[in-house]
Image 1 (tube, rainbow, N blue to C red):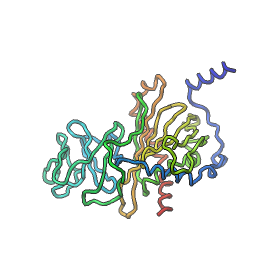
Image 2: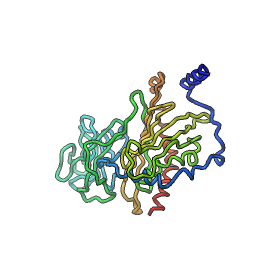
Image 3: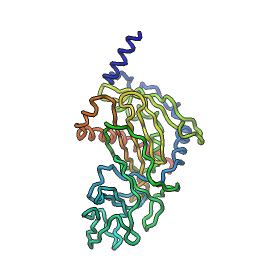
Image 4: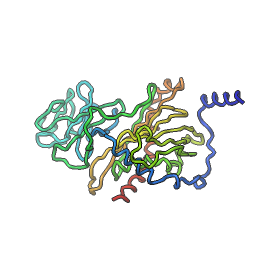
Length: 342
């Protein structure tokens, strides 16, 4: 018996896949009785109370280059680019001279050159115009917005005290492969977080990606729960065609706009999916817009995993496509939450 168990363990280590023999979608065991709204709401309240240091994810690190990148965060129009030393710079998007859109500005020797009148803007302050605190963690770029100091209005920023750097979740070591995807929805960051704090919907709402999903444990509906106990533990099988990869994953909320899924047992142990909800501000219709910026960071202890990273340019688009498909559905979930609340 021990020999047979050992052989199975060695086979599982060599071949992590199994043939998925899941019941049809409608024949799954319903999860509505387990998906207690009070548990989800309490987890959301605890997450929203955690300090975020006023940091917001702007974009993937690879998106910010020596070309100006324009975006909006919490109602403020921003421009991001790389300085002469390659460092990240994020500043107000309006030129302090006559308001030209600096997202259209060429970058010369690490400085923006206003296309209207040639004003050069970089790391130094120019009147009321000055760069915001920014942080590049190697996968994502962040900006810190403490209090509105300009004429732009929009979504509120944190009321927590500012910190020198954002809370970046613990990520797997090398070798690893990261892919970042971004989608936008008509909702608020809390709706994105609430979606991720409902693991019970996974196999029902995303049958093309998940099966045999079971929530092993969920935190109680307790507003005073300690952070180290605040996690959902989920057993799930990821679909890859007719094959599946069974894993155990945990879901945690290190900040008010971040949910982290980490594989703790099974293939890819240590891999993480970071879901960051960045408020953009009101759209033309006056309703709030939120960007989901999700970083999937894959890791494996298999000896050939590092060698396989030469195919990263081909693998990343597949990872982004899978994330896009999931979030097209989950944004409908989040938008529905916002619609009902508003």
